[in-house]
Figure (cartoon, rainbow, N blue to C red):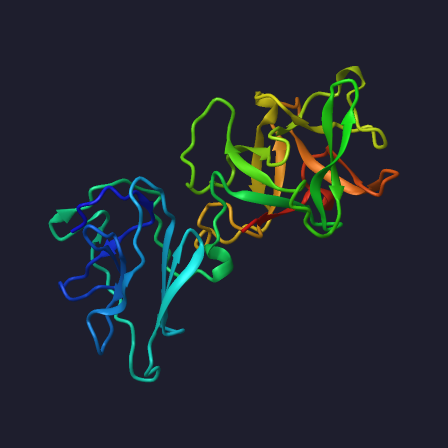
Length: 314
């Protein structure tokens, strides 16, 4: 089947009660690791995309195959980028033949896959392009305060006593120098780069420009924001548990339709977990003299000022 060591995500092959039912079927060629995304129809038992691209050895990939009979098309994504599609031409008479056969992961019939497969998920509905864009460990993202549409950022100002950059809300257009963060794992744990980020998990954010981490701490010794006197938010050049945040999503889907992972465009709340009473990342229209917006950790997350939109940076 696939005598390679290519490592990738989301590879699956389903066969039905007959060998000729290939809905859905996701294959790799031997040696070159070209993708074959196949399905069966009432006019052709082996329709779809043939030999698209070639995957490299010892590299993780996130692969997504979507198929819709109502839209009469199959789409293929590599690392959330749309790379190919197949359209049914005779939309009135040609239909996708689905099946309820067993699920085979990493093998077809008898032969197996010589590699590593992780985080396989099967949805009973077709993901739209927006939903397909998962936030992964290692993703570059930005955070936008929903109430004012300003980006979580730095402006070069520091809290003097602790010599750490002040986090602010700055601008309604992304500043790629100051507003970009990398999603990382919880302090003291290891994660697989390229794997999806589950909801209700603890993560961290590394600031791309400075190399430091999103951080907060208690309010002792006057460590409070200048205007609202709330819990400071800074960039910490070091590594500690004070860089950890519990991520929750506001726009929850029904349990049937919820994949359970963080997606591009989700509206989220971040809780600083080492605070005595976990406080939510918070911002409002309170401005500093340079026009930037004060950011703090404050409240229980039920306030509109605690809602943040996560944006995947291409």
